[in-house]
Image (tube, rainbow, N blue to C red):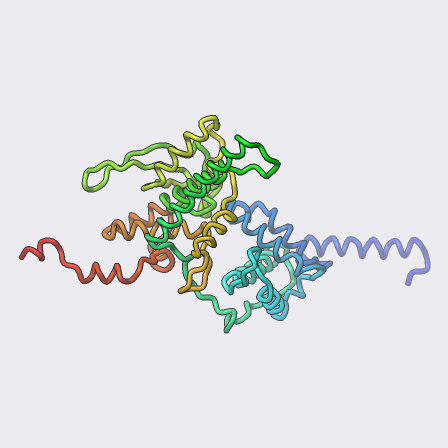
Amino acid sequence: METSIRGASKVAEDWYFELKTRVRQGDQLHEPLFSDIVREFLVDPSIKGAVSEGQHDNYLKKWSVLAPLFRDVRVSAVTLDKLEDIRNTRAAGTNRYGAPITANTIDKDITFIRQILRWGVERKSLAITVPPAPKRKGRFEVVKHGRPTFSLKQWRTVTLAARKRAQDAEKKREAQERTPTRGRKIDVEKAWELYYFIVFACGGALRTGEAYSLRWMDCSEAVLNTPDNTDEDAVHVLVLGKHSRGGQRENGWVLMGGVDAFHQLRKRREADSPDDKLFRYNHEPGFRELLKSLDLYTDPSSGMTRNTKSLRVTGINLRLIKNPGVSLNDLRKWCRTSIVQIQHFYDQAHPETSAARVAGRSQSAKTQ
């Protein structure tokens, strides 16, 4: 309401410096969009340093899926009602493979959103209250269970089928070279690598990301002296997994058929340099197609689908089946997890095998 330029300038100047003082004190003058807060969260060095590279990649993937649901949404609009709307929208959709989105995945979506809001309150002084998570009832009840494993019989079926596919691909490629056609060339290398990936990942109980992280320089031949004084060939690997911090790799040992798979893959890739990856391709689509052809994609008891994550579960279960007396402490060190995780999610050995061990008697008891 000033009537002179001089007076108006003085009022404007006072107002400007008052705003600067409020900003220095942490006041929020303009409410940001939720998407702006997410972008700042994803580049925050404290967040990157607190989680593994794999976990941070999961944040990026999670946001790429959720971003369309937050167009022009202010942070104060992310309320309990908004979280419920997002949950319902996600439940009505399907994943990239056309399967319904699970309650566990949706629960992780909500956890991620609330994590960002908490970060905004702590780091950006957002004047909001982080809403509670929606109740987990009915369709949204989270049931914790491990990825379905393969029984010993199913495991043999899968590996034999993968090997036969690679052999058939090799024969077809040879026939193609004898009589060149305009058809798409068969990728023999990819077919063989899928077979080696299956056997190698299972033999080391590797997480999918751990297997893909391996370079030739991270692998070396090893000999393990077992408690009965026999030597077992192994491959010592340094994996970069979900628990790795600051690029620190973890020790692993690939056993059983994984050792032979390693040597065969090495023969095929003699020209590789030490920093080349063992596995050049993404084998999820090929593995899924293989399982569907064998009618093993869906586990009938749980309704869950199998994928490359099932290889780690199978590797752990095969160790429990082949060596029932193994210490769970040794097992958890070998597969880089905890005893609780093994008991709750990984140990899926058929109850009949446990019952048989309980019913059995020691050799000394039989001779008495």
